[in-house]
Amino acid sequence: MKSEYNLSKMKSRKNPYASKLKKPVTMRLSEDVISYFKAMAEDAGVPYQSLINLYLRDCVAQHRKVDISWQEKP
Image 1 (cartoon, rainbow, N blue to C red):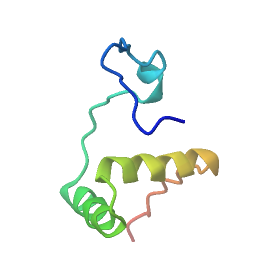
Image 2: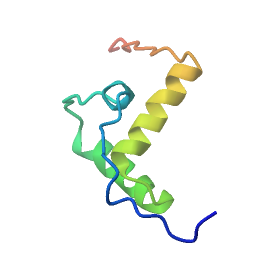
Image 3: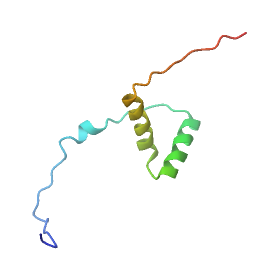
Image 4: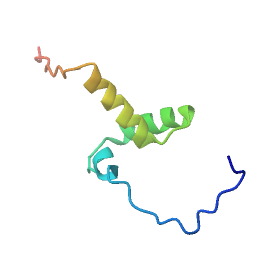
């Protein structure tokens, strides 16, 4: 194996799967939710959007369902 390679003549091309990897979306999140994930992301050393994506991916893998039940006022 060579110690150095000359890549100057190599033609670059876009990743054909890149558009299928992630889809940009716009979401409205509460300030406290963003602060929570930003603090956790800083501790973990990852971008906070990646951390949110990992959390949501875990929810998908675990087939978690949201249980929204409103308590009745006495």
